[in-house]
Image (spheres, rainbow, N blue to C red):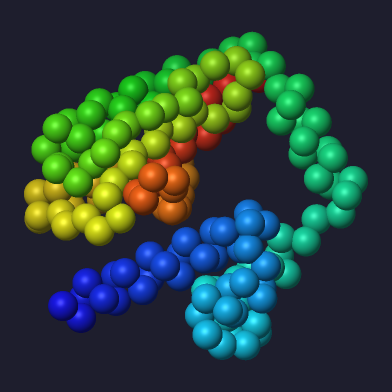
Length: 168
C-alpha cells in the first residue's frame, strides 16, 4: 500500500513539475496544491536548479523557433528510420501484452520534423509484471530521448523520441 501511495505522490509531483515548466501553473499554484511555501514547492518538484538552466534570451528563443519552423529534411538517416520502426514494433507488442496501455500514437518521420516520436498512453495507476517491466525498459533503452508526462484523459504519456532522423 505504501508503494502505491509513494508512486501516486511521485506522479502528482511530476505532473505539477511538467505543468509548471510548461507555464500552465505558477509557483503560487504549485505551492497551494502542495500546501507549502513557493520555494519549498519548487524544491519538492525539483525545478529550482532546472529553472535557472532554462533561461533563454528572446533572441535565442526566436532562433530556435525559426530553425524548427523552417526545417526541411532532404536526406533521411536510414539507421534512425529502422530504429523508429523497431521501437514501434516493440511498442505494438507491448500494447498487446499489457492491459494498462490505452493507446499508441506517433509523429511519423516526415521532412518537416527533425525527430520522430511514438506516444504510449497508460493508465495513471499501472501495474506491470516482470516480463512487461523488462520489455518496457528495453524499449526505453532504444529511444534517443524519453519523456514521461501527465496527459489529458487521465493517463500517463510515455514519449519515445528518435532524434535527427534527417541528415540534412
